[in-house]
Image 1 (cartoon, rainbow, N blue to C red):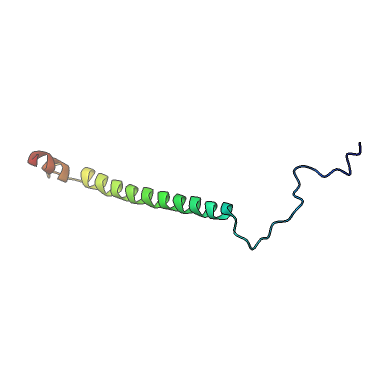
Image 2 (cartoon, rainbow, N blue to C red):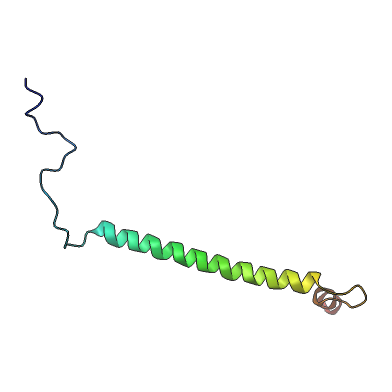
Length: 74
């Protein structure tokens, strides 16, 4: 048995055409879009949290903050 003349199983014997679009390429594009969407949503949530915390924590001691005013209304 001659091992050197046998083709290796992990080597492709046919080369794929690079111009054809495989489903793997579109799948990667979908994953990329999902990642960008998640990053955008996280940035928007972070900005909303920053604004909310600034409004809650930046009030003077003598002046009621928006949260305290909302508590008295409820």
